[in-house]
Each structure stands twice: as structure tokens, then as C-alpha cells.
Length: 432
Length: 167
Image (cartoon, rainbow over all chains, first blue to last red; front, side, top):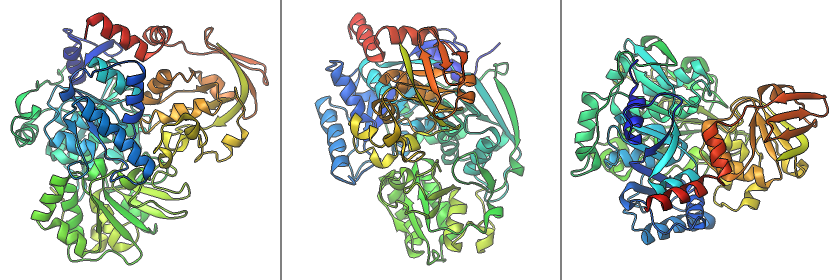
């Protein structure tokens, strides 16, 4: 029997010829990351254990993106902890406010992840980097502390589930709709401890931004990682990373064998996937956006590590251009990085969004986890392009979050209730 | 280790946002985190919980965020052990790494009711519902995990590995 791409990456990282699902390995870590919430605990563990140096300052990233620009005095203290640790250990990949972005948008865009890499992060959405054919997974602070000291991490090689998407999606239907629909099919523990491998004609047709979105939400099905095979689009993305970056100079292209073993294979007809919205309070509560027009809203959030990339903002702007945000709605835009802001300025995206009445934020996780920059009051309801709609996720435990794509979120901002692009008179559309 | 206490019962998919809401993650002080444990799923939990009490839940306990603050908040609230039908992957690692005892035992998790008295023998892998008079076998930790626990936890393990390799 052959191997999956995940098994091949992990075998290489463990220095073995092959590994199989269920094996416990010690994997070499190519990149370890943490943020302003998870790093302080890790730094405390690292120092308590008596470690005085990190395994490789260039392979660690500290990204203060959650409660920054510092939302309060305690948050400022946590950022300070990161900053001082980064200085002390000469961690070059520490990103200060003004240069920082949302970690899972920033790090791949900076070229810090190459195909075949093993990335561990003290953030559950670390699974995002599977879009560049890397193995990446979220862990806790102590695991990150261990990786900082040791340069390795212990892992159980996961079984893989293969999701094969046939056909072409309908207009306006994006990678976000595909992943919300998929989580709706299998549930929030439908891929518990497993690798989610996304394949098929429809995945080949997705942009890199959409592939990042899909891998980002693997954790919402309990997955250990999400992963997409390497193709021409991966090459183009990697070759447009900064000169001399890891994405340009390193990496190992690996692919699943035709006879690789899967725990299961799910065939999904992408052409039958509707514009999808996940209702409160689980990402698996998927429904067709068109069936939720009676859900009125107070806020729309477009951005985050799930949908804060340039294409996402362009999709939102394509709906909002020449229209206005509904008088009863606050529409908040959270771009992933400063470069995305600059690109959105250059092509008129930011102007269209601001003219429509949106608030444009600096890159931050902000309201996605109820931190700041758009926290909900009791009884308020939001449509968000983020990844979680748990009780209290965006603020008061009596508030509600509906998860959606940028197209649906922007249309909802115009309508004042959950809406499809067609319902607000958007022209013939979709990226395909 | 043997724990005995009253059951606080929850359903499936208890996520880390309700275990410790992100609005309190501007600190990593264990007692402060504990003062908000389970707040968004059970606002009275912190007033009700007694030292040694046991959280029992259905499948996928601890899903969502990687925040290690979640097992820390539970542990420092006085809870002795969490019994669930299954745990989310990151929470499972985090519980081991922060020293919060956890037990996978689907039958005990299904049948226990709020307020029941439970007795959990970690070493023997036994769960007993004293109120209902029922005994259950819990799943053993995989050998690697047990070894990690026996060596004093992940950081102790890594310390010995780093020292051995002369890193």
C-alpha cells in the first residue's frame, strides 16, 4: 500500500523511509509559531524548565495579532512579554504593530512555509498552511515551548480522509462555501484526529486564497491538518513570495500515491453546493443562504485568517461597490496583512468599501474571538467570514454569529439581513 | 490517583470558548482564569463547584481554540478530573501537558447525571458511579502518552532529550 502526502511529509520529518497512520513519531519542526495569547504561557514554561536558548531563532515566529494594537493594559503586558523574549533570543520573525498581520495570512505570504514542511503553532488555525502542500497543525502553549527548545515535536501520524470535489461550483460559490458545506456533512468532530485531504476537479480550480480558507477550517471538523496537493497554482504562489524566502529556496514536493490508504473517501458534487451559511452555535449547522433571508443582522465582519486575503476583500468590494451598507448594520473589514491593505488601496478595493460605509481596520484577529474592534452586545447578530460561531465567540454569550463567504457577508451588509449577491442585485458573478 | 466528587454534566462539543471566553485571555494567571471557568455554558459553575468535583461530558470535549488556558481554568477551579466520551485533539494534548487528569469513558459519560457521585481510579482505569452503583472500564492512555506522564510531563521529557542530544 502506498502513502498519503501527510504520511510522506511526516516520514521525511522523522527521518524514516515510511510511516503509517497510528505511528508515534518525533518530527523535525521547520517552523514553530505562537501569538500574543498563547506565547506568554509558552515563554513561562520555557523559562520554568530552565531553557536558555531556542533551537533556531530563524525557525520561530512570534506574531502579536490577537489583541493588538493592544486593547487594554493586560494585553499590552502580554505583547511586551513577546517583544522582550524576541529581543533576548534574537527571534527575527517577531512582527511589531505596523508590520504585523494575522499570523496565518502573514507567514505564508512572507514565504515562511515551503511544501513538505512541518509547521506547529500554538494556534488552532495553524492547519491553514496545508494549502501549500505542507503539514501544519495547531497545538497548545506547552507543546510550542517544547518545540522552541527542542526543534521537534511528537505526533501521532493521522489517518487521512480524502474529500473529492467533482464538477464546477455555481456562480458566487467559493472555497468557503465548500468547506462550510463539508463540515455540515461530517460534523464538528467528523474528522477528529485525522488529516483532511482536499482533492478533485473543483479544488484544482480554486485560487490559492480559497485553498487557504478551506485548510484553515479543517480544525472545525476536528481535523489535525488540512492539505491540498501541489500544482501549477502552488508553484505560482510560491514563486511570487519574497526573494530569498524559504518558499522560494526550499521545500520538497510530495504527493499521495494512487494506492494510498484512506480512512474514508467522500465524493462531493461541488456543482450542487449552495451558497452556504453556518448558523449558531456550531460551524456544522450549515444551511443555504437563500433560506435565511428572514435573519436580520446588526453587524458584518469580513476578514480574519479565514477570509482576510486580497481576493476576499475584492469579492466583498465587487458586491458593495456603488451600494451602501444598510443603515442598521456595522460592516467591519479586517485585512490579513499590511501588504493586503496596500494592494487593496492600489486597486480601489479599499475605496469602494469605505465609500459603501464600511469600517476598515488594521490587521488584527479582533472581533473574531470577541477581543476588540467589533464586540457584540447581548441579543446582537453578526454575519462573519470568520471560522467559529460558538456561544459568546464574538462577544456577549447572548449574541449570535452566522458564518459565510465574503460574497454573502457583503450582500448581507447591504440588505440588513442574510442575503445572496443576487438578492441585492449584484451583477453576474463569481470568480469562475 | 483516585478522585471522588460530584458530577457537573454537559453535552457534546463543549468548546474552549465556553470553557474560558477569549475576553479573559489577556491574562495567564491560573486563579483569575479559574474564576471564569465554564462561564459561557454554565454561569453558576464557579459558585457551585467544590474541590474534587468532576466534569462529565459527551463527545468532543474541548473543541475549538488551542488555548491552554482552558484546561488550566478547569484544573484551578477545583475540578479533579474530566470524564468524556471523547476529547478534541488539542485539548487532549493540553490537558496532559498542564496536568489536568482526563479519562475517556463513553458509557460512564452517557449515564452519569448532574449531582451523581463519581469515583475515578486513574491507574486502574476504572470509573464508578457511586450514586447509580455502576462500574465502567475507562480507555487506557496510549503507551507513549503514559510514558510521557510517567516521566513528569512533556517539558521534563524534552529537557532530558535536549540534554541527551547536547543541543
